[in-house]
Length: 116
Image (tube, rainbow, N blue to C red; front, top):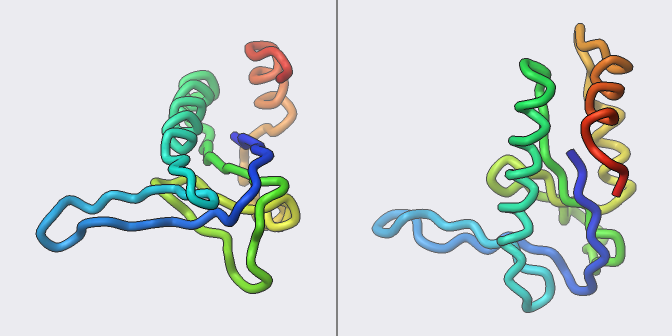
């Protein structure tokens, strides 16, 4: 499940707490707290999982015009990949469908949801 965003600024993961306090991960883009975007992706992943059953579903946030560093930059937060378009394409190419009927799963999802 991919959620594309057109945000300016550098995406980064800020981790607070840990040893004495609960660990909290925050998604920052520039100076903005965009953690609620991750919550939205997780809700969308749950909706798609409910539809496709035992087919594995992973969430990704693709920031299109963000200020990504030359080295590194992509990171996961709460099971959601945060990355840029070319890195997303590479991740998708590395994924295998296993014994999943991709065409039937695509049709099932397409019939349930309207195009964005």
